[in-house]
Image (cartoon, rainbow over all chains, first blue to last red; front, side, top):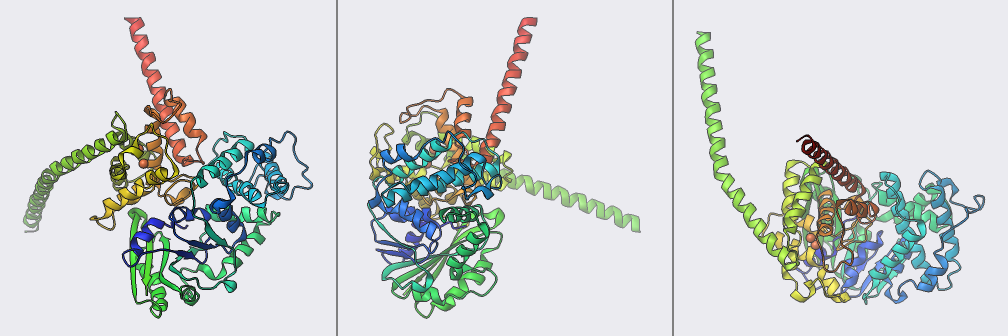
Length: 311
Length: 241
Ligand SMILES: [Fe+2]
Ligand SMILES: [Fe+2]
């Protein structure tokens, strides 16, 4: 769970300094960039998982423009015949994740997008599949009635994409690099949204989508590859974590911030288990630090945390 | 001797209980007017915001009522319900700080104005938490009352269960109240509770929490069934008369 709150972050950091550029060395959720992308400051985000990087490009690389009507009419078709099961690589997902009709569509959408000549248009089309999959998985989990035909829900999200990028001018620089290739970026704020391994609905969707993006239905493989890509970023809550790489990545920044969400544990525990070890590592490069907390639900001890450092 | 001791203890216990009851009522007497006053002030602020938004009904109070029904059905405890109702009364308070022309519901907005409008949950949160106890959830619930279940809302693009339940309830209640009232920016005006329910059900899993929509459906169908039963009873009585 990442409850990244850009405005809270900026408002807290601004107590210490004026933020004029933000770098996020690793990120795992494209949509959480939204608020920052509205501000007219240079923004850099690295997504170690390639399918997530593609989603980020589709929704935040504003030069790509909206999905064109001509492509919508040509590629978002209603299937009148069931597709050939033998060639459909997503058959193993039948009933486990998706219905017969949905399996046909995710196969059709993946393949037909190859016919879209413009690569960025293709990515927008594929990114809408992520939203549609998310909707279908919700429907399945909550046993809700599906009101829209697949082509209608696809059009709904392509239209939503269009609305989402309307008026956005700030181009976000998006990369998809492995930790070993990453270098410290010169910026006023470097941000680390902490990732915990906690098996959420969103995690399952990302795994399914990753497999689909790579053209196979092997969930185990997808999970393994995602974990590998996120390897050093994933925080083992109870074990000792190595934050020295984080410090290296923050070397050229005037300030650094960590954000995370905690449930079922008192803030004091979070301070001890997460904030203190980070502080111990970061005190060599940053002289000031402050931990902010926000109560989300006291009955479940859910809090959002923000740990800010300044040089 | 032991009987006397027992009697004495019993008398002492009765005295103690009476004293405690007296203290409780005394405290209640002191606190109750403050609670009432606080409630009235809250609804005064809420109705100001309703006016700014162009509602000619008590929208915020209506949202708080719907929140209460949904919250009880969703199993929130008393403390959570209290917090949720306060957040509902103040959910759009951030709009007070916006320029009047962006709030004109008949005016089409350009992207910059839209961005400004979308800052109202943040402005609300920011100002409410300024001089407030760090552990109050009301500002956080207000911050997330425009998030969508599918992660495409604002301001933080939280998704599904990442959005606190109270904020999901508030988002749904806000939509129900808005749909129940005529809004100038909307081409289609809803004919009644059934049509609103259909709209909510078709957007479950997109904009709204599917579980909450289901709960609301149950409540509304129960209301409708009870109203029909009541009507039939009245008709029968009229025929008999
Ligand atoms: Fe609002
Ligand atoms: Fe409202």
